[in-house]
Image 1 (cartoon, rainbow, N blue to C red):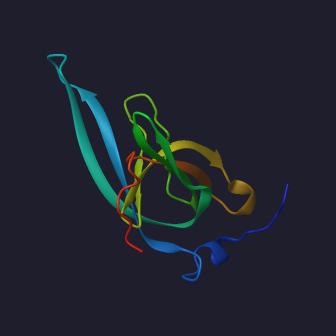
Image 2: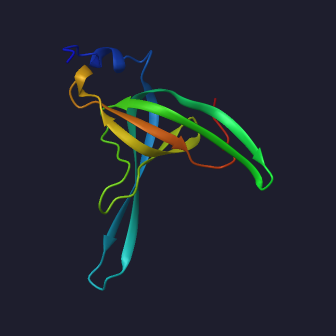
Length: 128
């Protein structure tokens, strides 16, 4: 297992995107058995790369845009847990749902690698 701490490089402003936000939906049940969702949006930092490039598929029923990004961060992103839906990451004006998270601790304490899929079927509008 590598014994290399690259946290200084990953947090370098040349690599790290400081404008990421994550929206978390927490699901709770009150005393009457009614479910409630609470949305909390917070900022975080991470290195973003392309996981799957944007691809437009035109079908008889309409157009669908696929794409995915990969984020390396110390933010504890989740693809969903008991009582929590998958995190939604906003990157350059587009929303991505966290589809799975891998531990990335071999290169520094607390790092995770999150695979995030584009949410809007039309691709949304980027802020480039």
